[in-house]
Image (cartoon, rainbow, N blue to C red; front, side, top):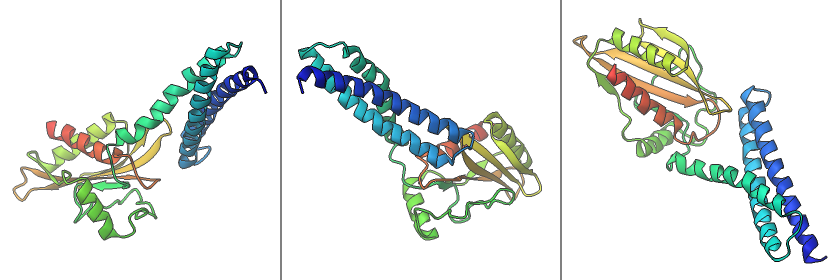
Length: 245
């Protein structure tokens, strides 16, 4: 086969791969967003699209180089393949970096000794997936997030819980429980375009003198083993907002 034919085939193939990559990723994301397919299946579609995009970049680069030697009518196809696939590949490559080396944990709390327990919402049945035992979860968690500790806030418990409910609403969380009697708030947050669901507990306990509050949080992903650091970031942001009042 002549070099010109190879050039044309590679250029056309690269564009087809780029279009297929975007289509597979988009279909998977949309179907998962509306729960037509499981969330992880939609995420797998994103990964499959990313893999195809890598092949589109490689074949597009090869087609472009060959077009520099033997210009063909398919040169624009190779260019468009790169235009479509390079940003996608860049986005996929940036996800691990955005996680900041977060460990494969999906259950994050400020209190390892006595984590808040769900009463209205349910803790996932396979909550120890990826860690095996409760002790191993505590060891990994303590090493990864030593900054997450119970927080003392110099306001009465009733006020702190009311502030927590207000902040949860501002964040767009669906509140399932707001119980001043027990000092507990439970809510669900949606994450990313797919709308992964994470369940959160805010537990507020009054100090002995009643003038301050001790606050603990817990944020748990409903699916997956790791969370790319999302739950810890959520807890830190919520604590910062709650401290401001």
